[in-house]
Image (tube, rainbow over all chains, first blue to last red; front, side, top):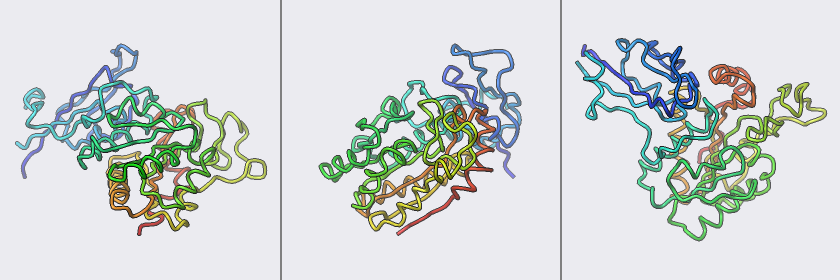
Length: 75
Length: 253
């Protein structure tokens, strides 16, 4: 079976730290920044476990602010 | 494999539609409006109707929708969006005309306009965001507020003997001969969002095919008004709102 690997980028300034992408992720990739905040003071989302990402785009679809871009490759 | 090797334009599988512009939305973190705006922009882009769409925005949180989705918008007086959309569609029959309304706008002050536009079978699509509360003005009771639900104007919970029962506007409009498609959807998970996208797409196609009025009710959250975190609001919605407002098509002709 072909292995699939994914990755995402988060537009940190647009992100409002609502946590919905973290809940939607099936492979526990995302988390909110524990320390860093953006200009508006929100703890934005980032890839905490990038190795687990499968590029399913669930996070991008549920993001209310459209800050997530999803990339996927077949190895 | 390194993350930077994956993040290349040829590997892109999902990004926000370009029709949804780069203005930061004024909605609270986790608001369902953002998801629905994104769906509307995606569908208009896929239909190639970017230059041929007239949208009517309500009074409520979505009043500034014209700042985010780059199509032509009209901002209607409170509740009068279906009446404005009627005129827009009758004068421009080849354009895609839809209204985007909340429950305070559509189900309270605009009930008459909504019922009559649907009864006339205007070829418009009504997107109805039902979160059971007046979000913009600070979380007051709406006609769609659930029995026993606490809001700032019913701090002991909504009592039917005092405040009446939750208004099922979807079921009401499904009874009218003018409507061709009435459905109730939600946008709390990726699967639900995909289903909702199909429903909005069908509504837009119905209006272009002159089949009558399509109503897409989207049961959604107002985490600020409900005084919960966005993810807890989604759980509360599935447990309480879905019991009162079950998902699915109410009419599809």
